[in-house]
Image 1 (cartoon, rainbow over the protein chains, first blue to last red):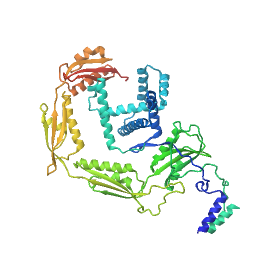
Image 2: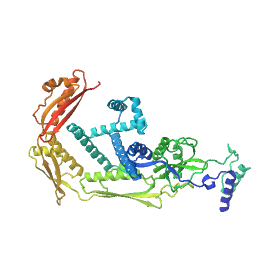
Image 3: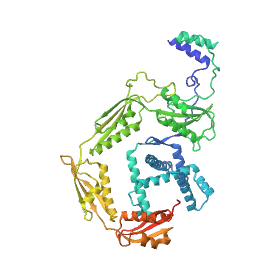
Image 4: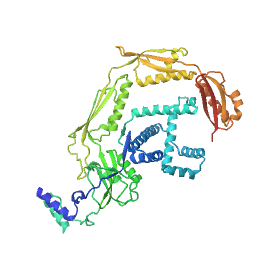
Length: 196
Length: 386
């Protein structure tokens, strides 16, 4: 049987059909560089490293402009943003389960509001977004996420008199406390795996 | 000469069936110039530079870690091909596609320089297959639908184990087992149950699914607890019957932690609704009696009743404030705050304007003065496009 295999091997070599991993001459192998991968899994929904890096980049640039950052500080910032993205994913999944969506009309209204509040036109807004290091599509995704989150919180707090906290500080405090409470509930019930 | 020779060798040595009419190969086999794919493990790895490899052409795309079971499907799914430039977005989409196949626990993309060009590597880690599944102590708590992912020889998705555990815990606690615990173990096994013919692994690239595992889920319900006597200490201004209704607890019914939280929120909401916006409610559980009943005690600090110090209409209806406050709205300065009354007046403003064909948004805004226990309420009105 060994003889048969050797003959077949010789034949294959003659025909140039050997699998390359077997027949290839050993080449010096430089270390592979990771292009992308999974930074975290939230109930099976992956958050990719490349998306995380895009979200961290503008914040890093801002912080670096203030003072030089050590690698530990950069890592800490990345972890904070990842935790934020995990919360966003949890909210998005729960919102999808309930049937809450951010519509294109709401997105357009949000962009119009940003322009109006900042006193800038469309071209200036695009320039500002580009300066932050985000593409306009990424910026729109962030706005969509904010709209979705607001609708989701309103949905879950329909029994709460949010207007009772309408003085800005009190409202913000109540809003964040409620968000924290709701997200904690989601985290408790979810399967989150951080690999970053 | 080689064609007939191969046939002859094949027939003589391997017992292949020789067809009477042989078709020569369509194209002669040529040695590939593409760089070879590396094998797993890749060893030392580095992060790619921030900009990646923009515009660099990919000499070859390699899928590493996939067994024969999954390789063909995975390779067919990839959209980035040799000869194309590196595009971070499309690489990410490929990773999402690979992960979405449901056969891999992890997917990673690498770039690797070789003398013959740039390699794009997709490294995957296969999920193990289920050799056996055991569920202990779950009688009465199990949702059969959640057992579907645990078919023997199916791919293990650890999320399924988590979902089953969560469901069992919910049902167990819902039945009144306050201290219920659910544990799971995923144990590697050497032999696949009833899977002697299973083909695992692929040649050369380290591609081998992660073997077989046995999944064990155990429920430990603990003692059963029921709602015992319910007391409301410090409650003076709301009748007990209303507080019991607001708490929504049934004496003798199963004691469920989540319902206790809802009960506290319900009692607090009852006080808020009647203007006691500072009311504080906490719940204390007494010791569990031999019959499983647990006495509950709500500690209530009622606080003052808030009254309206000012009422306003702002925004697009500011010009009609006098008429609205005097003729349309029922709230009055000096009266106690009541949640339902505010909601009703919001509706009255909407109806008032809609009857004129002018739909509006109405947002109540308040300024609370905790020291005086007063509320200054404004109805902010804005026009809505029909």
